[in-house]
Length: 157
Image (cartoon, rainbow, N blue to C red; front, side, top):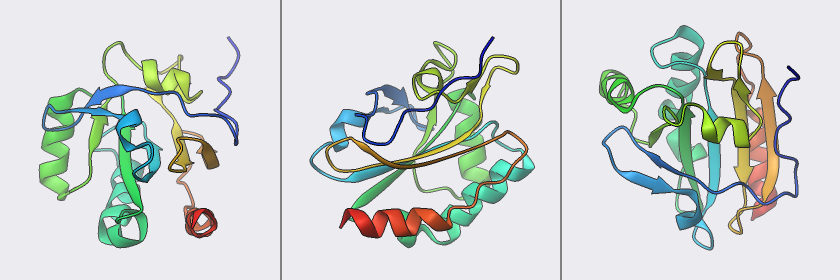
């Protein structure tokens, strides 16, 4: 089976509705016209690299999420796993469960790994219109470098 192809810059991002760690539905289209959105797909809650990446976002949240942009972190973990991880790590941004249909949203963004049943590290910055303006996709064992995100966010202003 061929590797998935991520959404391309300039494309309208596929809409979705996923449950956050508290059981609330979050719809991507709800941010259109309101805020830019940073989608952060990651393989597994409680894993080393994923914890490090989301902790880096948590520790510098003002640079990632503010009145202009919303962070939405997405994995194929069940909602209750995400709640436990969020409480353990103090994540105050939405952790969205793409558990069922398993990996459906990750597939639409081209970052679902069929061979392992998880989302790989895909990062997508959407403008207020819901159009992809910047992306970064890393393999499962490769930590992402989000330094380009801040430049891309500044370009949206």
